[in-house]
Length: 309
Image 1 (tube, rainbow, N blue to C red):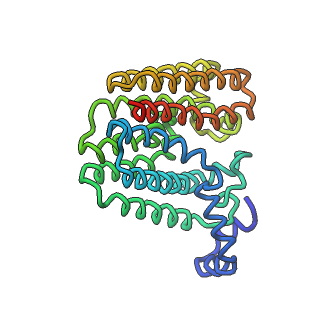
Image 2 (cartoon, rainbow, N blue to C red):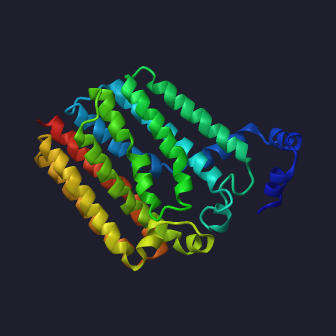
Image 3 (cartoon, one colour):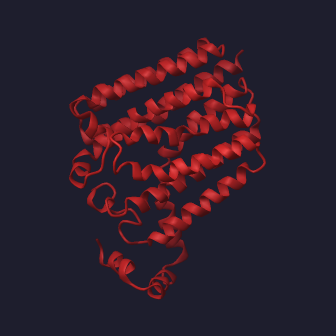
């Protein structure tokens, strides 16, 4: 822990406010920018692809562009709010992990209350975005906030917190169907389950990077729970996720281009196997980041198939 962090932790509020007031606004905004990981948009994309896919599937390929804009901006805001809450919850753990030790909150550049303030403001703005939408969508948004806010604490006791992350990252799916159809059909819930398996796959790859540090500090992750079967578990999760998505897409009448998109996604998963099989930290991280292209391939297959009907 830095001396600055100790000062922010132990000093009375007036001293803290004085220290903050002495920080240039541009510097403070940079800290907030990094707090919500806008410099690392991979998390946004992992939320966005399933959400967009849901909007396309729910509308038979003809989504209202205002809905696309609302859900895209809302995804950015809620992922950012989730990062702020996550860093607040993990502030005493992150300092023991090499990859996270220099995050703004952990390193003492900002105070805990600032992280909470940022998260609340972003969540409120996100809620304002969906006020014009139907009641069901607004109700689901409240549940989405509760899930996102509670996720960081699941790592304390849940053996596979990545499954809960999959619910948080995939809740744009039922919300998207609700916004378009004013209902959440079975297909939406199947896609949410598919997203859970996908999230377990890619976040296990991510957790494989921090496995040694997580073991030391007592954080639970799927990489630790799966142990020597982590690579097998990742590949099985990909397989289940793809099977469920194929089932829904086929039932909704998607064919050639959709299957082509799923084939590209499968090739991506096979490539990930070559990256993670030796459990090298940096190659596991590369596999995690590459899931952006996997998600993009699935969405592209859906969108192109509808466009060419």
